[in-house]
Image 1 (cartoon, one colour):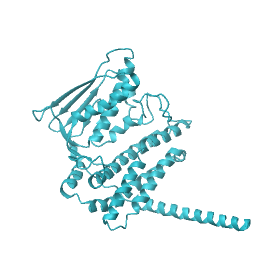
Image 2 (image 1 turned 45 degrees about the vertical axis):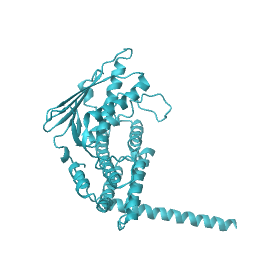
Image 3 (image 1 turned 120 degrees about the horizontal axis):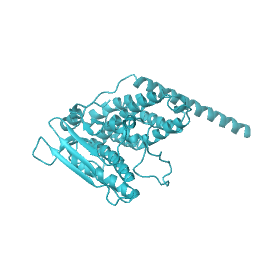
Image 4 (image 1 turned 90 degrees about the horizontal axis):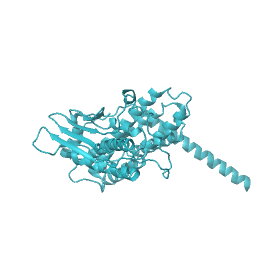
Length: 368
């Protein structure tokens, strides 16, 4: 009986291994197939026009079941080109597995007929993908940092990593926009805004979003430093005789941009004036012109030398201590990863130097 049991167990083990190998080969073939295509460039205008004029869920479903596998497969392909040591890091392998799983789930809808049941199931899968990938930035950051610490010459390969991460996070933002637009237009999301077209607000109140981001950063600053710089905001509308400044934009992106910059400004200010009762305020100037909207965030944190500013957009450079993984460790909530400041330039229509500046053509921006 023992011999029979061992034979059965061995046969079952071989069967499982064979099934796994077949699935792996099938997945690799699908990755190779879809990665041959290039993602379709889209603009805010195209998103807005679709939501306003068409809003056809079946049309969106049929397009996404082709577009999302293309984007996901290209991301997996990019990760497979990383240095072997970096690919072997547990965090990197975890991120790769997330994208592979998401690719498999979307591919399953390739031959569906877009009936009501398919549309409902598709929305559930998209919501699951959003949840699965919510910690991609942090997990990838740990993988990169852990790999970098093991290198004898950390400067070797930095250009390749920088190039990869630029493409990786730009692609991630594009995928999330596509998924969120579909979910918010056609799903049952409780966060849907009645005046929005998906994630896009045709009348985004810029000063209000800026103040909301400031209040969020202020809360974190007060938790750690028991105080926070005040906000001094100055709004100029050169187009209309109004103190309001409204644009067509994705408010969540603008909030994230300002929130990260406010955290940076508050930390610098509080650490430069550790014993002051009244620290200098963070100054914000919002200006709307004929073709531009500018948001300038200034602080009294002491600034930085030019030799330092040239390194601000290097992912592996930071003046802040690396955050530990333990949530119990005492670390300022204003410091996360050096990544987040770098990621800002990948958000649509945003570029950063000494001030935040949105490009002239808001609606012509292309998501790569």
